[in-house]
Image 1 (cartoon, rainbow, N blue to C red):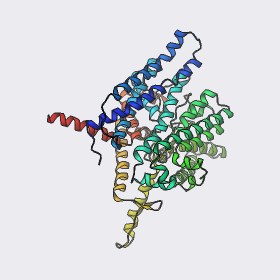
Image 2 (cartoon, rainbow, N blue to C red):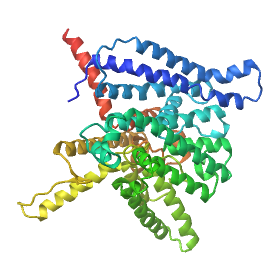
Image 3 (cartoon, rainbow, N blue to C red):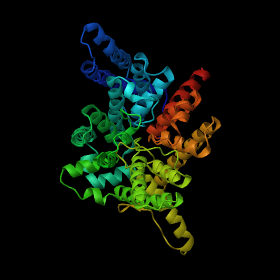
Image 4 (cartoon, one colour):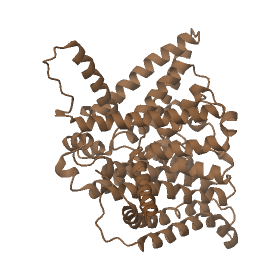
Length: 497
């Protein structure tokens, strides 16, 4: 059992210093675009452009120096990694808000919102007209999602897929425990390589389809990370090109597929993808959504032309992929969709993508187990009392503690999303829209079902609520509980003294 205290936080801070050092380098990458798009190349003007990135890079390096001085005489354990990650996903967006603020792009709160949305790969934005924003700032948004996306994969490998859990055992059979368990560091490095290769492939395909190079880079970074930031207010709908939408949809699915599966694919084990139960469920859910929602919207809308059906199907397909892969891209305004289609999107945002991918949500593996438990409960009512039923995944039976943990997380996830929805409702949004936004933020999706006017005029409290939901959803609740427990134990100890 994890019982962290303030000493555990100190060990976590020591480890967090290495993350801060890496981030100090990452914050300097957008300066390349500062130089390319500077316009005039005199030293003073260039310094005005790049200082907005030098400042956060310097802050991160100073934090690295401070945190590394925190004494760490005990061995780093899993709970320390969890605390480090929880703090990192708070500190990095906070420091990452500086470029938006220093460049005059956004207000302080909006800057933090934009940064949190980027690093958690959510894709909700406070930038009303991206076309009017500096290219280096736009690239920072996409870069934050790209780095945040691979960070999610690393988090899944190091923290959530621990020994004895259903996810670890399932993917140990898929990949091979001899490869997965002792070589986590090597697996993460290989994942970086595959992640980069897919990103380059997406960039090349988009350029071939006529998307400008800068746009292609930003879209590809946001696609593989299942983030959703783009360089245009109309998102992917700006291009009005079905081929571009299809390529983006395919790479959204790639990003939402476990990179442990991609490792096997690159080793020549192509059928691993179709044997994976999560991927099969994803395809089934997308197929059902496409058929049912398209038919419902076509009939409810009173359409009679085949062209209308194709256009509706195109929109439903793209937004369904965006919802289940937890990517904030859109090709049109979904605020006008009726309740049933929006509810279907909400369900897909809740389930999310596959374990070990960049997607958010509760993850399909947990959703599948919940369905199996519900079926098990029904079978117990209809079969004799002497019947022995076990719940299994991939020929492995689940222990009672595992099922309790999964139901606890899924239930806590819904409760937090419900509370978020109630808060947003109290701030002026209709109930359905409020819960849609809550689930979208909690699942790190980024889709919004309200008008632009309503979105950009929301209150500060509503923005803070969405920021908290993004943070909680990205960390899947329990790391935050562990972090808070550490501080409460420290505070309780001080009061006793």
